[in-house]
Image (cartoon, rainbow, N blue to C red):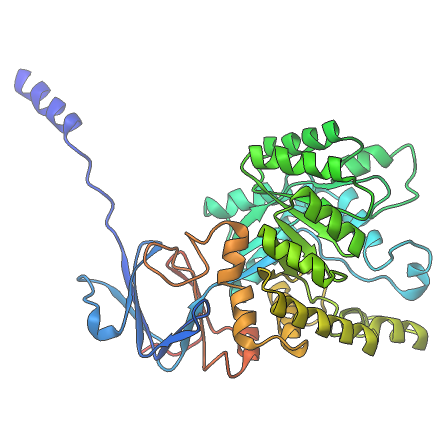
Length: 445
């Protein structure tokens, strides 16, 4: 028996065999680097497991034995897209006009209230579907900025990371920090606190502001989201920023009007979301302080008209309201040009949270990015805003945003040149995340 014991001990002490590494060689006619604007033709990417190992012309890459080869022919390879501002656990249906007239903020608040009072499990499962639709459309990373219940987005993030459900990488913000009176008004007082607590953390003082950050940190969030509507003071917002930075979290501040934008700047926010009324001086302050401007061109192309017209009757007056005005479009055109001229760092987010008939969530989100071209942004700058710039905004430039060795193999392909035709990103035929093919309708050779 003694020899058997010795043999058993030797087996226990011997190192276990390492799992076999898988390699994939992805080839295409072109590879576009949005950050530099350069194109590699022809191009190949050698992938080991979930990371990029080498990027070079095909003739310069020697693939290991048994490497899987995917040849996408004349396609153009790009980094996976990044939506820097989304709401995956909302899918709001705009109510009919007669119902909308009964509510404050009718295009948003009734749908938000329904989401809050429904089952959190149902809501998270819906979020999982929308996440899959984002991924199928080539959005491989999102920053989910609120409206997810207490832990809906953090749990969805963890499920995706664990491989239990498919979806993009998620930076989750948990509950949004707001002042009383934002979003939902005139609630039943017997229920209002319980309802609000499911969705928001209320700010009433600097101490409470810091505590709200700690409550979100307990849920293991990746970023803090604050809504500033001239109702959170500079000391309160500064307390949020200081506590968040102590927790190594960035702070994204919803600020659309000039006063709110200035409060966010003075408090040291990491990014300003929307920022539609930013002045030239504020853009300069943001540039000098390194604050990101996150453009959300969601409503530029008559979004509300497009998502309501297929399903409900709209009066002429409401149609005009939903269609927007030429003056509004011109203001956004001017904002885009001023942002480009200012030198401020910028990214782009869809702010998508509405049900868009005939489109998946990913298709609806990417359609908003195309609005930037209509507003006068050059195509290459748009691609930067949703790849390399967005990665820097998220603090993930070392992981995503460009196709470089050591980064995650999050890769999409367009049939032709996306700089010549930005609408090609609306129908992405090839999507890879972490080295795994998610979608492929291009012919492999």
